Image (cartoon, rainbow, N blue to C red; front, side, top):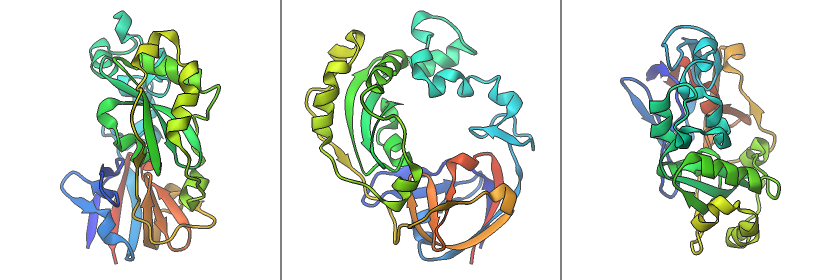
Length: 264
């Protein structure tokens, strides 16, 4: 059986374990059901997630011209402290920026390879943690806009990492930590503008991923270079597919590629 479509990040369902779905225009695949099976992934062409043209993907699933023009790829996406919609100031498209920036945001701690701080819209909890491959996470601050979340993250980055080591995450080389203690330890560094939004009492969320076997030395698949790959699916964590030969494929990093997926 073969499915064909443009890659976007896998949809997820919070359960024990996490359920993963690869969604194409006219089909979807429950990836959990493919664990232990051989699958082939074949690169067909590009399809920019904005303009739809067959142009090389530059970043985030967009071709280069779209990446530098559309609001979905503006700098404030990756650097929320640059948000300006709360000041009624436009970056690329004020209507879009108000829609995204002027809604509740969460500053959180997640433990995937190490404890890290991050920002996400409240509506994206726990999806954001799942996408990062975190096995535990906790909210620290809930603020009314993206700017306040951004300046809080910047302040906390001096005291805790904001990066995930993807190799350690995929090897499951992790330690359980007390995120409540981390939250209390970092409270003093929250900026004055956000102090009133500190979450005084909550517990951490634990996540379980559908993995038969973790790789010892994960190696990343470059599908554009290889064109086609076949392997037995051994697990899914974050947005990565894990295969029996320790090859891993980052679905999110390959958004905008049109692929054929064959279940052998």
